[in-house]
Length: 303
Image 1 (cartoon, helix red, strand yellow):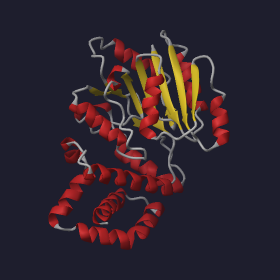
Image 2 (cartoon, helix red, strand yellow):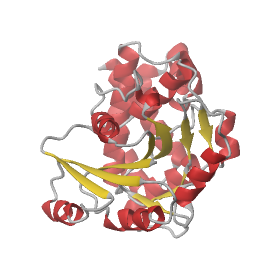
Image 3 (tube, helix red, strand yellow):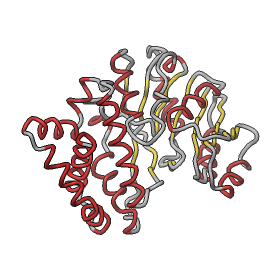
Image 4 (cartoon, rainbow, N blue to C red):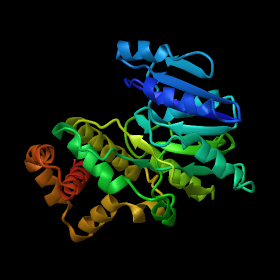
């Protein structure tokens, strides 16, 4: 038995749900697809998604935006079945055996505990997007796409809830942190929380396409939100030691702090952030992108 859980916000999920429904009807177990709309502002998208409701598909409308963490917790609490498949609304099905791959893996591992997370990973379309969405695509292709073998070397560092199979039992006392309502690090925090409680995180090769590419402007805005969340977690001393050692950004920040360079980085951000953003939009460079994040974190620390 399987509950497929999809939080949605201003994204038409009809194609995604159609592919999942087609595969689900070929399974030998009961299943449901739950789409929970987080108070989308696009009424036309809401109307199309509402039409999905019926049969194995259940549509739930939130009247107030709950945020990225709480909406996932609400989906879990609403699920009928113990096995949960969580994914993002901007996903695309990459294999005709996507659902059966997960169930086959479970059958082949009958000794698995009742608490676990199985991550299928993600992938991107081979063709480049338009120039105004190239930064997000380049970051995804070069930084996020990893084989299961690579991800299993450091399983909690590679975690994203974009495409995971888990259980309701896993969420007992282990829900997403609802104090983080904006984009960034809510998934990272959850992954390290699972590590601290020794809940297995297993990676397999069963990816979904990440189709919802932000515009360059939106991705930079979300990046600043993520850095703000990170700085807040730093201030509240809520970052696990393992994450501090794994994070490329925090390692660079600590190094620059030790060398006394943070005031210079903060000044550079104030002087150059517009020029950096323009350059990232015209010709995306991940080295410049890393520098931009470091300078912004330094700026926040000096404000």
